[in-house]
Length: 200
Image: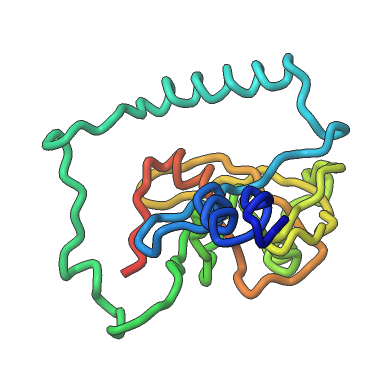
């Protein structure tokens, strides 16, 4: 039957050609391929509708209070000059590390990390601030690292942060690990500052 061509729809070069035409994996070399991120929480961790709406209201309130407006082309120019490169040895691939005042202490080796959602303070630095332990609030929320490993927390504390002539009250988490930096400042702080991190 194969020799006669009765099974041409199932065997032979015609069938192979047809399979290649409908195979989505066979793409042109110059065609852009897309990998979508897979993320989300388990059903147990899903926020309720009420909590979600509450968070949404808080975001709108923060946007209004901070006067964050959409920047249209030509309205505001954000630029960096040679003065921003003082004390920087070029070329470099270093992260953005700064110093600023926290609870009236000058803290050095502070990492500005736009990829981080939380502000982190090490236990050693917190102890040097000589702040009452009673100000630490307990929390059951774990801190998730980039590798997805859970880091247990001692608690959360509110501290005043002074930089660029602005004072903000910020939440800091105290992990039970010892990061390489004294503080890590995340996106929330950057957004409240209306800041533009400049790594060059």
